[in-house]
Image (cartoon, rainbow, N blue to C red; front, side, top):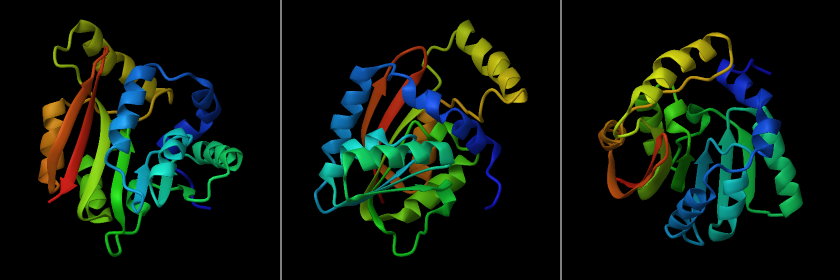
Length: 215
């Protein structure tokens, strides 16, 4: 087996603790879930990239024909498969994969999703181009991404420019890039998508929800 990346090892090591932690903003999560469900169709073939421990994929599975859900961290996928056995669903496949590991042959997916992932991707432009190639003509890409707050203050600056780099240097934090929501939308448009819905989930950090169609 090929060695996994530092970020994959980081998330894999923390997978059990991650799975045990409650969702910080349950109302925001449920709203995202319901908005996403509204775009899914029973005949869809879907892909979720960065699925973590698989909870979202399992909740969305009844609304599509099949969902493939992947994560870079083997530990996360191990837990996801444990949940899959408990749920007994037969239209879900979990696998360990980086964004570019997914085959673009025939643009195979009606819907590609990436929730809480894009700010953790080191080469976002390249990743978005690959994601576009995964989506069927006229298909959807649905994402929710942590962004810099609209009015970033001193606390955010201390976290972004001091705390996170120190933690990364000692292996306690993965790569992360907090761009503005406008910058994120610009990159997604440049990749060849047309925005059809946006929404914000506010906290100390902003989470930008986007539904876009392959142009």
